[in-house]
Length: 154
Image 1 (tube, one colour):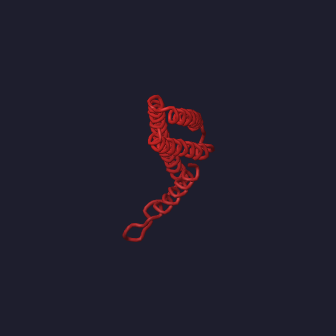
Image 2 (image 1 turned 180 degrees about the vertical axis):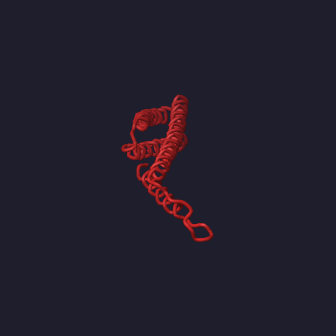
Image 3 (image 1 turned 90 degrees about the horizontal axis):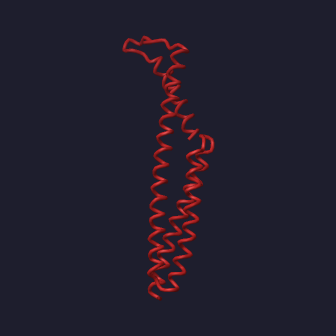
């Protein structure tokens, strides 16, 4: 996120400079830009970039929270399936559900870290949370596919 912010500010500063020295149809320079103008517009660009970054963070956090909620719903479904299953399958479901609960708890903790992370750590924590959520989804998919095979054998 910091790289994006820096690039946006740089791009806007260059754009302001080029725009400030644009020419009208007669080839005359329209307006001279003062350092105060540059400071003002750069400040506005920084503020706008900050707002954009915050919106992106909020959007990502909502998306991650939604994925986590769905994963927790799936864990509950798996637990219900375990209750109804035969002994072998019940044991497998119970183990899978426990593993998923642990991973879900790790995802909740990482989401908390993400909410508290500053700009410096945010990208790193985001990548870690993405990895945990992917692992959680893979583990659930593996458990359900194994349960389908186990149900045939029960």
